[in-house]
Amino acid sequence: MKKIIDVDMDKCLGCHTCEMECAIEHSNSKNLFSAIQEIPIPQYRMSVEFINGSNIPWQCRHCDYAPCETVCPTASIGRKNDEAPIVINKSKCIGCKMCIQVCPFGVLKISKADNTVIKCDFCIKRLEGEKEPACVKGCPTNALKLITLEELSNKKKEATKQRFLSAFKNDDD
Image 1 (cartoon, rainbow, N blue to C red):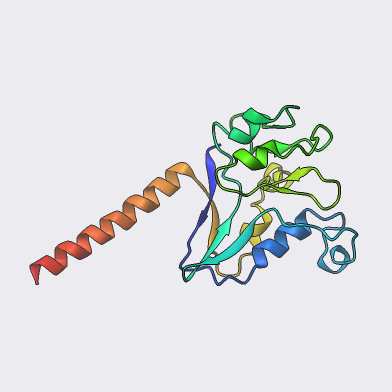
Image 2 (tube, rainbow, N blue to C red):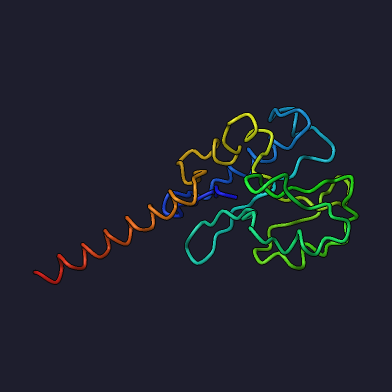
């Protein structure tokens, strides 16, 4: 996949709005007030944790060589093409949890509705409609952004350049 959800941890307030937006997007009603009355209540597929003084949003990284896809005995995990996110075909998932065991990020979990596995799917229906994922759209501080790998590389290069220039200027003093 050529896109990734980039996280600016300095901007994340830990408000959990991204979790709520995710749960609403994956609800039957797609509406907050109706979603909270659904049984079971909709689950979010990404989460925010407070670790060592920082809020860290976690979601599936849609690995190029995804261990969850490789280990799935029913081939319920996969993608349509190289540009698509990894998704789970719930009708094939038997809830064996092998994918949960091999995920290096620990972001897959069991659905309370039917004991199948759920994970971030980049809000695939939104992507197909050329919209950004619900977590990105709903983040009040723009801490989450859906960007290309090239944009990520350029962002990191710029940050490194700024650190280098800052250190260089301090040496001149």
